[in-house]
Length: 245
Image (cartoon, rainbow, N blue to C red; front, top):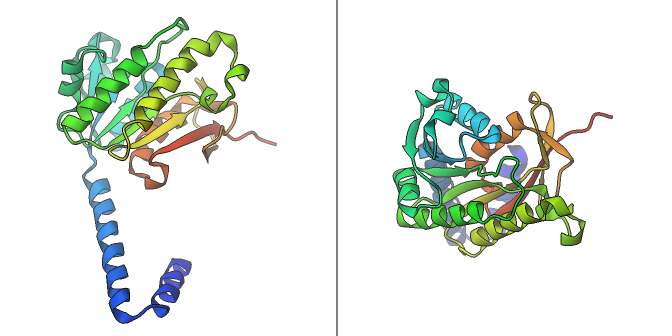
């Protein structure tokens, strides 16, 4: 805390009183806006809640006290222990009306859409995300964390061919986020291999891959926690388990 106070003091010493009041007013208003946003961010919608990563994301969000709504094609895929705590909207992410029903009244959105083991050509994830973004604009929701892949950081020719089609749709998802301009506060989370392992020390890297694997537990936690971390807004974020030397 001391370095921050000293830095502000040095700035104020270099300007006159009127300028100082102006700066303090802007800083105060900005802090109030951010604090207000974080404080009221309690209602979220999760798309992909029944998948491996989506399940742990949902569990963690509930433990943190969030009110969770989930859009599911088949509600039965969500374990009863979670279904009883989640507001379930039955529908499909490719149907705009269904998506709007899930987004309306939420403070933030988490997208963990996937194709499970299907690596064939698809636009389901990107088409779904476009619907989500459209619904967010309509209902004035601005914060969203989205699961992509660390292949986003690779040169195209270095992506293993078997993953080319999935990577192509992840790139379309990223383009959908970026093309929105300044309306959204998006976090593009780009994990490597998602491992079914316990939580462990991990690292975050903005703008680059962080490693070769990440626990699903740590990834799910990050999707939720990142919503209130302004340093991740409109960034590509790598996350990976730390390698023990």
